[in-house]
Length: 488
Image 1: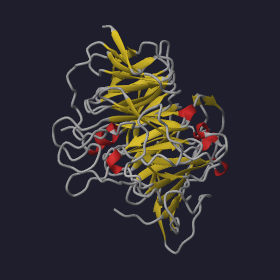
Image 2: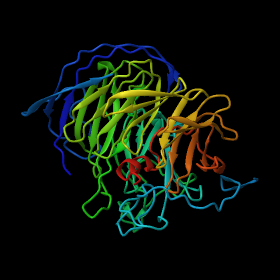
Image 3: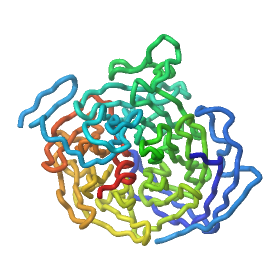
Image 4: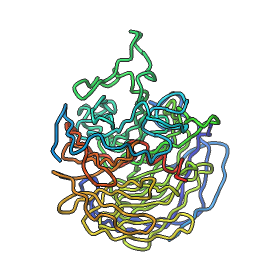
């Protein structure tokens, strides 16, 4: 697949009031813009690889070709081993409710890493990637054992304030198994899941890479860190991002996942009040496409992102939004207007590609993109954070009520299955993901992650030793697999 380098700007009508808080901070703002047609302009590509910034940083671009389009607007005991705590029966039956294993090694004859191409049997590996935000690192954790097998610095120290200033949060895993991590103070980094895919850049005959939390290589010295793409944001402007991050679920003719699919990301051009979106070449980190969208004026700008089976990028803003879709083929932007007073936080797509947004007002918002109709499910416990939907149509949502825990919703009937799954010792559950066995992972800012049985709601494993982890996103790739390989 190849794309020309393009830049698109959208005019829209937005009048929004800030609600709640995001990234554990608060603020107020509003903005207005004018609805009109979209203008697509060709711009020259970056001159070098993934370390170059895009050629346009102010919502404009130059070139010879232009085209226009219209914008759509609608309204039992425990044991602790090497930092891992297991609870209850640790030899439970494997839950293979995922067809393609996004976070696991191939089992169906496909080359490379994580999950695609079908086939039966246990995958060779399965990882969840959790950002240690205050440390400026990301942890690679074996979901079968709960052992952290790698920890990586997520970007260069561009400010002289240390690695921690990068503030990583969202991670995304592609169907091949590799991960990307977004730094809220600027930049996106790709990391290989398998040592076999890490280049021996210093020629010593081995790939020099982290083996765990006590073996973190300095920036530029871990050979499994494949590239870094900086974003044109002020490195001290924490609210600008990027935050939304999602790989495209690209499948090759042999039905195996592409090794280097495109990667979508979003950040905030705060001075111009624009949501800025880039599609990157997965092999190099170079910019393929750019799209600018007038935003709501809310702090932190674009907040969550996910890609459907067609490669369209769905993005939600924090608190009152907006919610948009960028078309994979045309880059046309659709703005989905919610006529209520939403308080958006985490977001995910279900198997049909429909949008579910967890609200800090204890409401779960649902959008059918085809009809462009919003519906709500009240959940009750408190501020909802990260969310993920499994192949049985269950939405698992972290919440910060009293006590904090997890809500489970049947997305088909829009009924509550469990108002509060207990998470012993929970402080601030934030992110949710699902692993290759179907277990649910809950990231807690207290410094750990829970692995939960989705049927019994029992915590079967707890990973300790994380450093104020903060990740809302598809940390295993199960969300991408869900839309690319839906059940049935």
